[in-house]
Length: 177
Image (cartoon, rainbow, N blue to C red):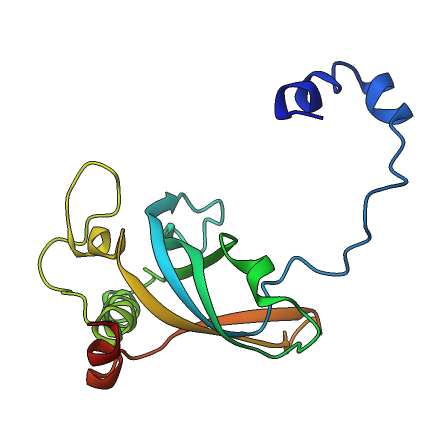
């Protein structure tokens, strides 16, 4: 079924309710696979969500990166075919808490640290809003390693994934030359 045919098949709630889902595989999680990947940043987005809590008037600011897997260096799940992950996305986002200037500066400093690990400039205007060009935008088109680790949310016990940007070493640069 083409994407157009698929979209057209949801013309009404009754059509959707009658849809046979027998061939849809069960998923237990939407977490990205754990392992070490080479990714290309496809998109950077800075978003601001106004607070709805009058006791915390600072907005929620998020810096999001859409990373496409271009190579798989290692997988935790040895039964998974690494080639099946090429082209899949890993979404990495970071909240820039703005309750105080010190909180905000610390969060921006952590984000700048990620950029430094993968040898991207991190000075000047932040950018990322689609209008103002800044150092956040330099990640787009850049290829670098990330490690995805799985864990548990300490408050809820839910499964989580953490994306760590892996420092690019001189050896890595020499191998890619």
